[in-house]
Amino acid sequence: MKLTESQIQELYAFTRQHFVEHYDLQSELVDHLANDIETQWQKESKVSFEDAKNRAFKKFGIFGFMDAIEQKGKAMNKRYRGYLWTELKKWFEMPQIIATIALFLMFYVAFSTVYTAALALVFYVLISGWCIYKSIQLNKQFRQRKEVSNKKWMLEEMIFKQAGSTMFVFMSQLFNVYQIPERFGENASFLVLFSLAFTALTLVNYISLEVIPSKAEKLLNEAYPEFSL
Image (cartoon, rainbow, N blue to C red; front, side):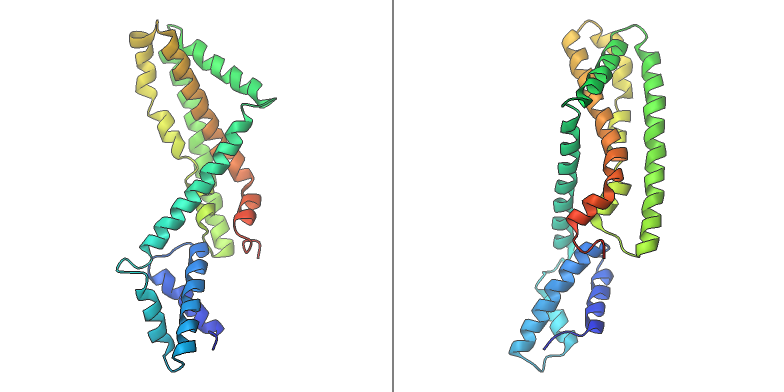
């Protein structure tokens, strides 16, 4: 005995009622519930759909789908970090490494002068302004995509809505930048490390806000075979 299409849609509605927002996780849970229900029917054909559904749901424990949501989130975060790391490594290979070295030297020279505070302000206005603009733009794109598909995919939300999270790490270092001339002006080792950190943060911001979103369709089709459908 197999589930009907209307029963499958009811399972989708059931997952949404239990706070599963993303279609990819909904599909996995619906598949799991459907298999469990059909297995029950093979043993007890007279069990109602509602009773079989509730039995299947109880197997998830007292927290329901919360554990599944958490595990899916971890898996997608790991996948997203993999994309980020893959793109970041390219900036330490030819020819991108030339731009990386130039960016590092720009930070190092700026942080080594008596004009650190003024130059830091210029950097923050330019970089933070661009990050804010791109974050707003990506959020708008995400809303438009959701209106068209009427579905929300977990990885898609990470690409378009959470891409700017590193921006806040970057901005949080403003106080430390202002302290450089006073506390670390003659410490060359610290200036090298601090300039490297700023270079890495700048690259991560660019990759997360520009590079990965530009490859969204390719990445989503790889992650979800059913995405293009």
